[in-house]
Image 1 (tube, rainbow, N blue to C red):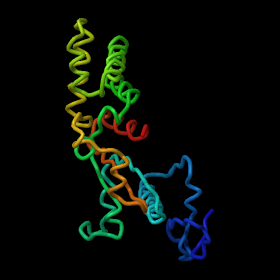
Image 2: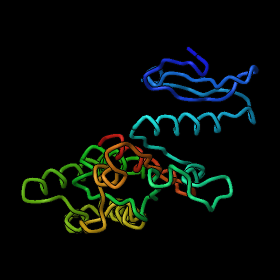
Image 3: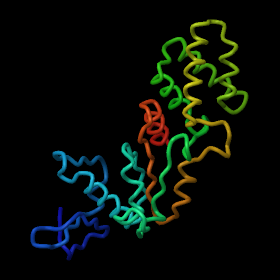
Image 4: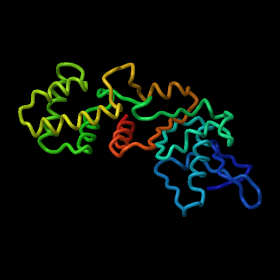
Length: 222
């Protein structure tokens, strides 16, 4: 459904201009559910996506963008890249490991185990990790340091070595932390943006597939 300047949509999104110079608007309600923007290279898919995003923002929406190429952080500025736009205070860009780190408690068991499986942990090692998590959750908070200590007690060298390598790789990403002051929650991030909506840009440029997967799955799980 597309209407011109006399649109009566309750939550209109302006998407462009028609050949007769009328401004084209669509209803934000029509974008509930799964939507795809398709077209050949250079046809304006990214431009349309950003126009829709800013339109949703003007309507008070809370938005999360998984930004593969760091294209969305600059939306808070005018085309010169220096002057702040009206959206400047409503767009917050964070990077996994630098401004975006979670505790294991916030990440949750299933996301953590899925992440470790994606990093190459298999079968017996994965089962051992699940047992460690469940044991730690009974006695206190699940933390990286606690998991490391339990892995150190494993007598099967192949399992122990595999888990030590994966845990070391995970900690090097700085995406997971035991230090509460270094961690954030989605609730806290959106609180910074205010009650009338905002855009949380997750900058994934240059991140490897494991970090991307961990980031997306953790956020979607919350």
